[in-house]
Image 1 (cartoon, helix red, strand yellow):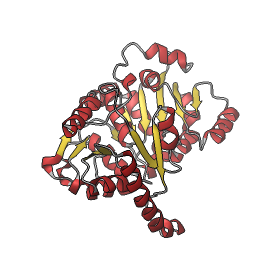
Image 2 (cartoon, one colour; image 1 turned 90 degrees about the vertical axis):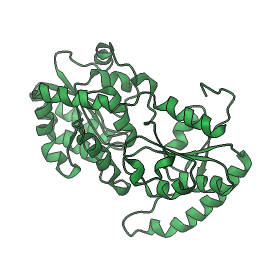
Image 3 (cartoon, rainbow, N blue to C red; image 1 turned 30 degrees about the vertical axis):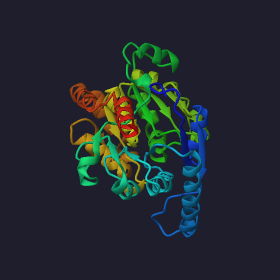
Image 4 (cartoon, rainbow, N blue to C red; image 1 turned 135 degrees about the horizontal axis):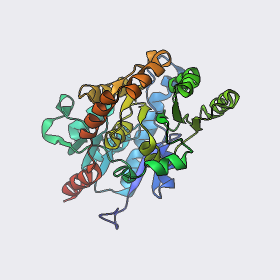
Length: 339
């Protein structure tokens, strides 16, 4: 919209998912499809999958016909499949944006007829035709492009002590059970060690975590349900503990701080572990498996906060993986397809 303000953009999402709230908040229209993913376990939800998929395919065909786009972009969510299938059936050019280091099933199927495939990791020709691939990176929030001089602001914003090392814990906006359990187990010891923690618990867990923290009475554990000013949180942190979703990894590369990834095991094709491993192979992060996280949480934090050389080496290496121009690179690809 910055480069082409007269463009018309329509989002399509999955009903009940976060995009149905976030997209209108950002000022864009969105249509919802009843599509959902297949559960890996045998559940009743899987019985409704074919019906939801059939309805979503019909609705997507209607949306594409009514909106009549010149170009359709898929980012791998549940709604991408039906919408891109409808567009490809009508001969409308499609661009896939694969955000992870391991391609999802939907994108692998759609790749056959896609005009361009934009990726965030090298060596993605394992999954896609090499001639269609463009390495662009994942677009991230603009305020993360420059964190210089924001550390003091961040400390003030979150009430942090400038004399204590700061650990930032991120489990995503909904929260991550393992990270919250690990904090409950180790928060007394973390404070006793002289650290302070800025802890995003997520909305599902916030009330329980708040009650536990109130009872504990620890002044240097700073709990938040959700952190909006992520640039200030990143700037204030000396160490970050995070899940390894595609956009989190892309942001953390830009931020350039030492990171411990605790990948979620509850995602398709275990892609978070693969995202984290791609960084670990470059000496750019530490991976703590979810199954070990509650037991070894403080041990891993101690190691990085007490070994400055190792922490510095990780921070330098992860910064080298950053692709700050991803949004522009993607727009360039869209322009080429529209021509």
